[in-house]
Each structure stands twice: as C-alpha cells, then as structure tokens.
Image (cartoon, rainbow, N blue to C red; front, side, top):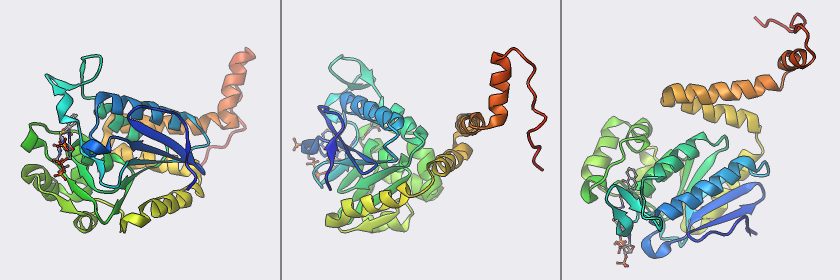
Length: 270
Ligand code: 1HA
C-alpha cells in the first residue's frame, strides 16, 4: 500500500492511505514498549484523526512484525509513573485509552507478535483486533509490579468473561492467536504476511458504510459500559443530529431574529 506520512514524530509513525490512518509505535528494539513521549505522540496523532474528515478509520499497530506493544517501558518507570524528558512521572496511556474509546471512528488493532501488559490493554480498548498467527497476548502486571484495574480489567472481563479475565491477570500466562480467537479477544487470525492486507480490507468495508451510523453505534456500544460518561457521549451525538434539523435551527434563528420560536410545524413523532 502506498502509505504517505501525515506528520513526523520521534517514536511513532503516522501514515495515511485511502481514508485510513495508521498509527504505529516505532520502537521495535524494545518490542514497542511505550514511553510518555510515545503516548503523547499517539494522543496528538489521534487528535488529528478525530479532526481530519478524510480519515474514517484508524489502525493502531507496532513496527517490525515482532511486537504490537510490550506495555510501559520499564527502563523509564520511576516513582509514581513513567518518566519522560520533563522528569514528570506519568500514566498518560490511560488518557490514550479514553481517547481510543471516545474517537467517533472505528479503531482497529493490527497485532503481530507481542501484545503484552499495557500494550495488551491498548488492543483490548480498540473496536476490533486482527491478529497475525505469531501474535501473543497477556498481562504481566502482578509479575512486574503493576496493574490496570480500569478498562484493562473491567472491559477485558466484558470481552472474555469474568473467569477468563481473572485468569489472565492472576496467572500472567501468555495466549496464542488461536486461543485469543477462541475466547473472543480478537476478531480474526491471519498469516503474518496477510495481516496488513486483511486489515486494510476490513477498513475498506467499514469506509463504505454510513459514518454517522458507525459513530452512533460506537457511542451506543460504549454507553452501557461507560455509565454517565457513556450517556454523555451518546447524548452529544444526539445533539449533533438535532443541530442538523430545521427544528433546532428554528430555535437559533428565532433567538437571533429576536422573535418567538415557532415549533408548531415540526412533527411530534409517535
Ligand atoms: O500496567 C501498566 C499500567 C497500569 C496503569 C496505568 C498505566 C500503565 C502503564 C503501563 C503498564 C504496563 O505496561 S506494566 C507491564 C509492562 N510490560 C511488561 O511487563 C512486559 C515486559 N516484556 C516482556 O515480558 C518480554 O519482553 C516479552 C514477553 C514481551 C517478550 O519476551 P522476549 O521475546 O524474550 O524478548 P525480550 O528479550 O524480553 O525483549 C527484547 C528487548 O526488549 C529486551 O531488551 P534487550 O535485552 O535486548 O536490551 C527487553 O528488555 C526489551 N523490552 C521488552 N519489553 C520491554 C522492554 N524494555 C522495556 N520495557 C518493556 N516493557
């Protein structure tokens, strides 16, 4: 595929092809472990994806074919978080997780090799996951002195069930692509050399669909799980749709024209 660079970063690649944005962690020497900078760059790229109306779907991946992401870079883990050049400890991957769930476009994890620890959680929070046959999944928290009790626990449990999610976290075992498929953790498994082709194919199928319908579906899937914040997201989309209507425009126009609004002609649907 003829990917073009959307913006240059130090620790990620950010590319575009035919309506698809691809965000790749580019630290293959450490199995794509993330630092606060990696995460800040991903957050920046996600913001661009949100605002750019040429982009309809986002692929999240890791460079090199050996790892999707191995979680937080343990060599920069300090007192209270992962420490970047500004010496501030951060857990900013939690903001990225929220952003992946909130962006009103489908996000697809394209997983080759390791998806481990905080890197596993990143694929978990994506809308869909497509795995290569070499993919390996697992959490390591209780082994390396960490845990993600947010989406990493509760949303994982919604996907694979309570018993399996507890097994994944308590034992810190690793699961192959077929096992991940069997437990509903990924949508599809393909040979490594077909991973990008298949993912792009899925993206193209999605891009043929109604963007507003996809947006409403994503918000609806999230709403139940995200409580009041989920309702806020779905309600915001309802407001967006309402603002598109003549009925809502009558309210605004009446205000600007300093007259009483006349809503009488708008239907009261059963
Ligand atoms: O839990 C959280 C959070 C919770 C709440 C809020 C925020 C959070 C943010 C992050 C996290 C976490 O991600 S905690 C979990 C952190 N990750 C891990 O515990 C995984 C560590 N890595 C491994 O267990 C293994 O590397 C592996 C199973 C993925 C692969 O093993 P393999 O094939 O034997 O490769 P290995 O030799 O271990 O790794 C290759 C190189 O990559 C090594 O460097 P080298 O010895 O060649 O210099 C290795 O040190 C490096 N590397 C791999 N993973 C990491 C890493 N370096 C730093 N951090 C890593 N995560």
